[in-house]
Every structure is written in structure tokens, then in C-alpha cells.
Image (cartoon, rainbow, N blue to C red; front, side, top):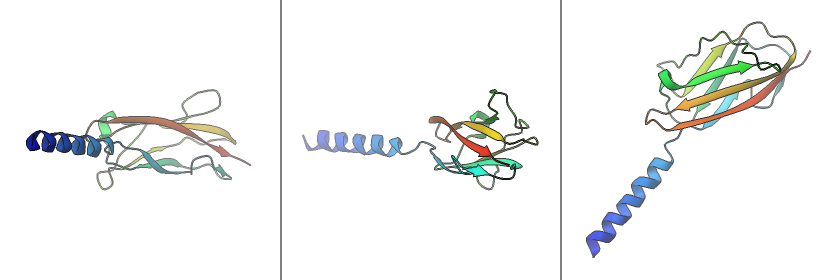
Amino acid sequence: MKVARWIASMSAAVAAGSAWAHAFLDHAQPPVGSVVHEAPARVEVWFSEDLEPAFSTLKVLNAADQQVDRMDKSVPGSDRSRMSVSLKALPPGKYRVRWRAVSVDTHVTQGDFTFEIAP
């Protein structure tokens, strides 16, 4: 009976540990929901876990839902929790950042946020 309880408690501990192994958005530049007065050259997002670069995506869209980044998403080897994409010259307006993060243990998270460029 003690062995069965031990196995059950170890299984619960492993399951609980793997629940934390998702790459959640930690912070971004420009910041989530911000209003900036100069068009950024890049959008950078940081996650709570290291990413699998081949399966993670980052896009920046304008109000007409057109992609306005340079489609050069990167995850540097020196900081695999950071993903970035460079931007074309952007006029004032609202922009949506859409991301899909696949952590190195293959868990998938996705989301989006906006920022605004004001004159």
C-alpha cells in the first residue's frame, strides 16, 4: 500500500512540474499595450522558458491585418527565451503582435498584444 501511495505522489509531482514547463510571455519591447512616439526598429518578446526556434513564430500586423514585419524572426543562441523580428518603416497607428511559442519541451502557447505608434 505504501508503494502505491509513493507512486501516486511521484506521478502527481511530475505532472505538476510539467505544468510549469510552458513558455509564457514575460515581457515585450515595445511594452504590451504601450503608446510609443517613435516607430520601433524591432519587436522583441521574452518568455518564461527557452524556445524551439524552428516552431515558434512572431508576426506584426497593421490595422488592416497586413503583416508589416520583415519576416526575419530570430531566437538568438545566447538567449533562447527571446524572440524578435525587425520592422519595416511604420506610420502612426495601432499594431498587433501575434506570437506562438513552442518551448524546448514541446509545449505550445500563443497569444497577441497591441502597441500604438502616436505622432
